Image (tube, rainbow, N blue to C red):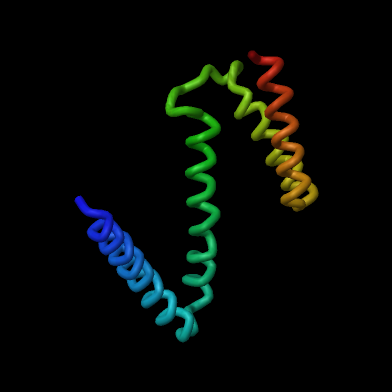
Length: 108
């Protein structure tokens, strides 16, 4: 497979991906959606992030860890509480990293 062929495939995939995402967004941005639908759509990013996060917290590296030996879980719970209380992304990130490092060193 030549380098030119690979670049044609990459560019073609980029253009098709952009077109498939742009057209619905462009169409929906011009419409005034009913409030229940707007509210429902607002939960999609949070739901996707939660699904990705829970999978990584409970199954780091694709394997289950016992709950009492899982530093990811022990760090995630207080980190979520910190975010809920202060709503500060940077502070929450720092707290999460520090807690993870502490729990990882304690739990082995």
